[in-house]
Image 1 (cartoon, rainbow, N blue to C red):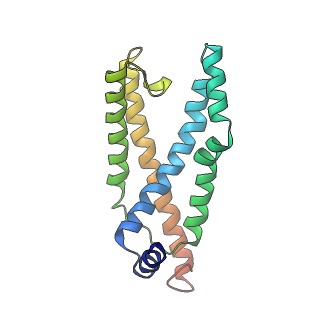
Image 2: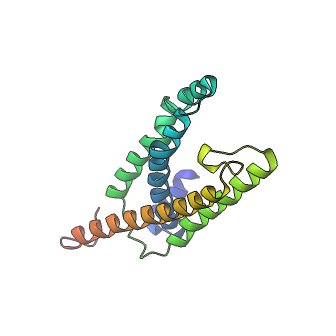
Image 3: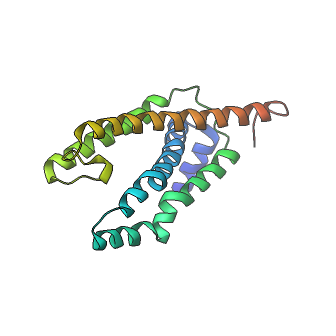
Length: 167
């Protein structure tokens, strides 16, 4: 049954598959960059030695490398070999919606547990900085989405000279 569904999707290339690709690729890139440039350094500055060791074990492991690195490489290869066209920006709203949902989840989590999901989202210390962080996260996810769309558009222009498909 799964094989049949895959064949139908490959032949049809439905809008749902294209939307998923156009949302997941920039979000993967975005999450990986945020993880390794902001989250991990913030976690490694934790003064509590036991907590820092916990985060070192969590972040510097095969699972973390696969979740926050290998997946971006796989999505990059997928971007190069797939036959899904660039979206002409109709997916940017979905990318923004993912960030708004994350912000709402982070707020709900904080106000129900009293704990921040991540150190830079701790409302109890600097609430204004957290709102600025949310806005920066939203802007950077949009930047990632525009970057991926630009790469896809360049790929299609490159292959348009020889044929109508990069495949």
